[in-house]
Image 1 (tube, helix red, strand yellow):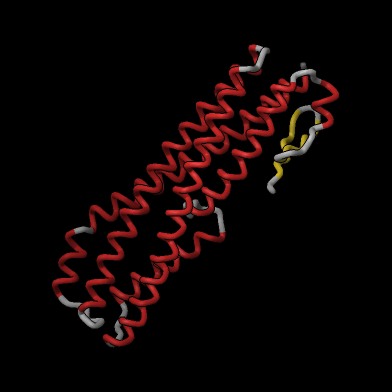
Image 2 (cartoon, one colour; image 1 turned 120 degrees about the horizontal axis):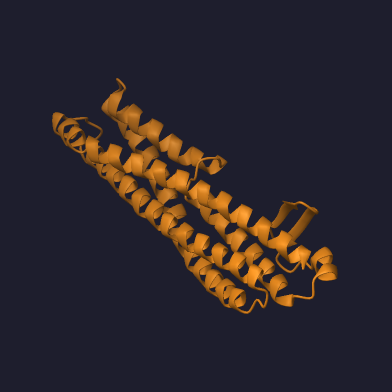
Amino acid sequence: MRTILITTGAGVVLIGIGITILWLTSRSDTPQAMAVIERYAEYYELAQEERVLLSVPGHQDTESRRALHELLIEILTSDMTDNERLVRVDEALEEIALLRRDIDEATKIREDIVVVIDTFEREQQHLALTELRIGAGELVEAMRERQAIANDITATLYAINGHVHEIVVEIKQADGALTPEHIYDINQTTDMAESRFDRLQRSYRAFSENDGRLQRGMTAFVEDALRQ
């Protein structure tokens, strides 16, 4: 179970699934606010798992994508025998399989996230205090936007992995030979590959900015709840 430490103007609040927030309970008679906060903790746990699986920069798990990139460069540019290149191709195919598994898992987690967001929104609508209801509504909006960004990242990662897979499979079918035809095909798709990479980097930046917005929004919500 993950917990979240939220620093507010009044101190630090610990949030976690199933954790009773004694400070908030003692200062507020709004059980709906407690429900929203605990639902956010559930959302946060799933969102962090999804973030890692999508290879968002800042996680150790991004090593797999970096390793694949380095393998591809080595396969296409290094002076090696066909047998040596075949070994690298097999290593690349293993990395691609691992990354595909992570993307598929992230897609499954996103389905669970949608359920949590829908529940969060229903609980948000039951908040009696207008200020809390508006704050929670802004969190719902940010969560929905994050889902759209995650969908875009997933689609781009699938496309990039598919392109790399095509390249290495062709070389494997040629028994490790890097033919002029391979080079021509790769050069023909370079612009598209660069465009996908640029789009992925933009999506990653938007993803991180959205996470910051959610963190600030949740901090503000807790502060508002503590003041009630």
